[in-house]
Image (cartoon, rainbow, N blue to C red; front, side, top):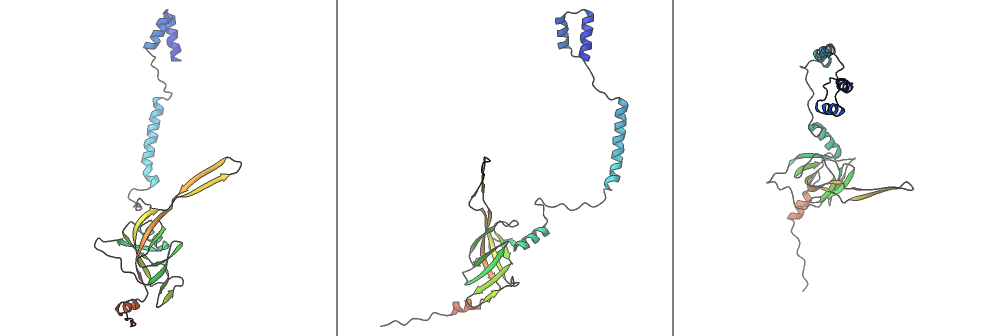
Length: 232
């Protein structure tokens, strides 16, 4: 509408078409497209101020205590301990620089359960389990879900676990398993998909087994081997 008005004014004044076009290019019309009056704007400001005044009543007073913020992982320490206990391990702490947890081999074995898997381990063995979430490399662990203990002298079977038996381990590394290829195909649908997956694993080194009598090991170490008779 504004452009038409300017064009009509130029035509009534008797200007040439090229002059009218030049004037249109040089001096664009100044138009305000606001459709709301100043009274409406004042009403909106008053309504916004009323909403700000009533915001405290709607959401409650600011003196109330806010809930404790969770860590970036989304779980508190108590939740981490509970989940680790369900899997079957407990984090004791990091391994010290002067500590020497590895001991000589002992003829004792244990059957432990970590998550949904069972392992037969002895002192000094290395096992790969599914990734343990809440532990780092060089952390000392206690595997408290022991199903069975055995040695040359005795065998102890739990029902289903042994309460006084524990297996100590150290986290050596977090690694990835070999890649597994998953191929999907639907006949006569032109559908083919190839995907790869690498399972996250945790490598544990068994350092000690507790809960079984080890006196026979000391006796074997103190006894001297008998010398065999040599035939002349």
